Length: 243
Image 1 (cartoon, rainbow, N blue to C red):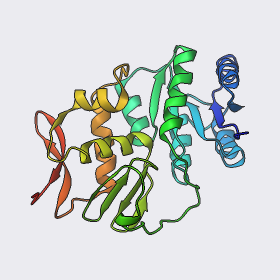
Image 2 (cartoon, rainbow, N blue to C red):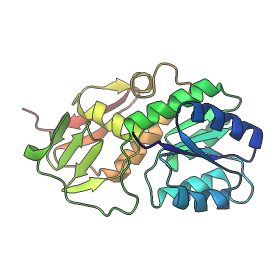
Image 3 (cartoon, rainbow, N blue to C red):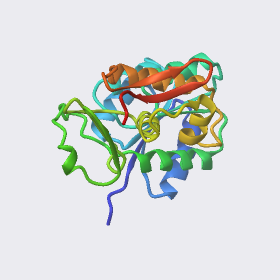
């Protein structure tokens, strides 16, 4: 029997947290509820969840700081929850490493669907795992694209750059893989939102900019390829000297 996937629910509104837990439990997830930021960080280490549902407004340290601390050691998916609707809040959450963002009030069934979608795309790496050497291209398995010093494996969500594995949240990976799979093809922000986040996503196109920025911080411009901005249109994975 497969081991249940674990969801850490961080929300100081016990009624909302228990409702979320009820729906997730029905879907065979194991849940744990935490009501403040300091305890969330502690329970993250103890509970070792597969995904975190993280409210922004918490007693003690807020959700942003909880996200920041988790991202220091782990790439586990984080879905932020908030009643605040300002664009700034969403962008900041994404810049800190959140994988998705839902505004309250939300439909609980939609939240469960998003949890499942993120988990399907994510293969958890051990938090303490050091940077490791990549497998040679000829040993890669499944679906992958490769360029000089870069291998992006869609099957196991691995990215290796200059011989080392990079940790990357699901949305970052999917954006990179999609662009790299279509070299020198320009995509608008709207096209990328629809392809990567789905037609139902209600976020702003700024979301794409945030993820591109995070990718560029991890993948510096290479002599043969780069993530390129096409001003007034969008982005492309530019391959130079392509035959």
